[in-house]
Image (cartoon, rainbow, N blue to C red; front, side, top):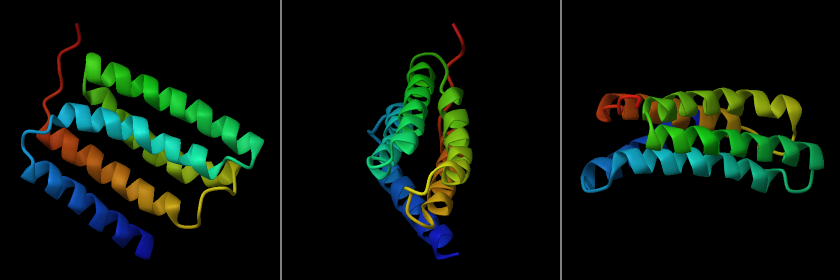
Length: 127
């Protein structure tokens, strides 16, 4: 349960900083967040080839979603954050490389940031 509370506190801090620094482009921050968070799993998985393969595949998928979300329609980044939360729950079933409790922590952050970006950022229309 502590992992959930830590995730909430971290997310409140992130949102607080985004609200304080209004000049930051929320679309770009959302895209960079979605790109960055999957690479943490690569660091966790460095010593296990199978886990590393899954982590690289996941990072490539979330990188692609982030790119098109930033360029075409921001709603893809929101969907990507939700999908990454699901990834956080499923990854420990395929790998033991992620630290215990990281799944709940990251799921909390992903879902709360997805909600925040959904409320605060208007998606671009598809071209």
